[in-house]
Length: 108
Image (spheres, rainbow, N blue to C red):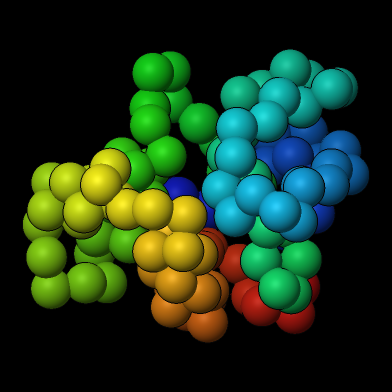
């Protein structure tokens, strides 16, 4: 399954949304269509993704980043489960520059 992010809006109904900048990755619910979402507060704006039921942030990020890294999704998820806040921010910062990983252009 390819993940496609939507910048500053719900990827399902396109309602404008905002993420809390102090949270690098967070669960959100669209107020319009009630979709369960992941929100990434990137420096270039918030990016939203559809969230699978019972999916942890580590599992989501491992699935998103797995194809672009030389590690298995299980290894990435394991690393992220044990990561502290600063490790998570550093990991997301490294991925943020890649349009392929976030599924949308950085300036869209």
